[in-house]
Image (cartoon, rainbow, N blue to C red; front, side, top):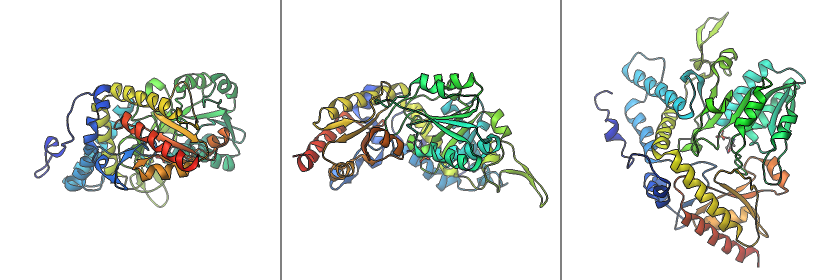
Length: 429
Ligand code: PMP
């Protein structure tokens, strides 16, 4: 704190504090904390159901970003002046908030990245490139996002490793027996999404880690769709790496994190070279910095990290008990209501699902469905959701996807259903 900087209380007017209940979320008061929800689109109030692509931002996060630029903007780690010290303090304290938010043991196990994609590439290009030999296997599932497929394929082409894929059933679930049968003495890594963005499936990651660890195989968890929707505890999952994206958990884009077990990170070579990741540099030799800074070359996304910490604070105050109950209610309601629309086929009907509803409407291309809904201010995603193998598995080119977050209401789903009836009038006569 220095002169001119507002106290936290003055600066952050993000509304009522204290834990929510599911009933309170269903009542919609939390929407007041999201200024964008007050806008209109094509003259209609915005109904935002594309949170699996990116979430909207609460005032608290917007304020944290503004506060940083207004009062603390400076580079980190290298300055002796006051502002630089304050920026460093905020940045490192954000790391500690992320650590707490995902239950890691030590803050040095949190590496700030651009997001999930960069976190997975980091592991592939450091751990994988250093340790994998020709014939070694990486095991993924058939429901992975491209960002948990392509980095391993790039490594496959370079290191001649083998990429194996656990199949999914018609509901969009993996079978643990299939998974176990694919673990071999050549498996060097399991990389799996905790929640599928295209299907909403929640994978049995804890059991998968147990089975992999019994064979000394490390596990990377893609947590992009999980953080922000339920409690994540990396120590409880017992995973070795965990990747997350800020923008999917109410924080800005361009920031995310990789959690890695300290003993593994300490053994890994750097990802990129540059400032901050070194201890000493001469033209003959460079000694690298310790973790986490060894993996954060160059000026990081300082304000992004601060915004992400504010988002973790928002989540903690909103209460996961309320969030999971509310989103579960929305999923159930949406599943009932949307599947009652004639011609709807749900894609992804796993028994354990997060608040993502992917579907097809017979006679209408998903892009046309999305475009007509948009005219009513309803934002859903239409496409392959960066999971083309999932689309191939279900024999569809794309799906319409409605995905929910704390600010959605049952009435949003009613509007969606009305919109689908309108689409039917145009396309399905
Ligand atoms: N994995 C999953 C399951 C995702 O949903 C996404 C984003 N759609 C990603 C990875 C990639 O995240 P990002 O683009 O933020 O790096």
